[in-house]
Image (cartoon, rainbow, N blue to C red):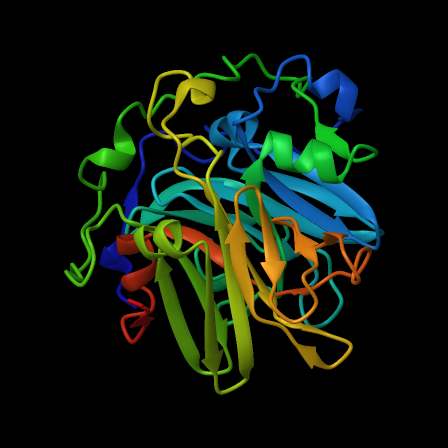
Length: 329
């Protein structure tokens, strides 16, 4: 990596303030100010299910939190549409807290940890400058879905409160029209296999990097794929707004939402198709939601194992993972 790839993003260090003491509200309270179609980043650890609305993350980019007793870092880079969650513990057991450095690399958020001031690449979870350079944060499964999806599946869940201690116009999008234009401040090499702003679901298993374009997922509903490490299935359904389209996030165009799972239950391989608002497995006829839970049929109550994945703009993934295989059918 060359330091010349790192540029200032506008606001300086902590000019975009991370949320360090997040408050949460119950689903009925959040339902008063969240639209059904608004995107939320969902984390569920040990049954502690939390939703982080993009209408808040878009203004803060980082939330330092603890879910299910585990310290995590919730991150969102609007310029790359990367909503990623990491275990905040590094290999020696030390817990790190993160802030926004004010820098970008290939348009992607560069975080810093408050212990050593090392800089970390959000898209990869890797320290790129400083004492901890070379360390890598462990990703935590997280899914970007609509508010309706979360509140239906997790009525007892918690929702990041708008009472953050900062005055921000939550619900508005300061990047109006961004996801239909050219990447802002992007200086990396272009990978023309897909349009730069095409949304992709990305998976890394072992040494394999794979991208599933939303255009394919919208058409198919459910896509099965086998990597060296085993099979995965990608679900996609409409009903989630783009946070980066309209000036009001709730009015953003429908881009849908996607999630990735191991398509097995108790060692039995399953084959899926989308049926309107749910997904059905061919083997038992059970119906599943976007969070990988069987909601009706013989397997009701079972859950698919989530696979760590990202939901990025193509350019933001390809620049860090140029050897990615693009799934086209």
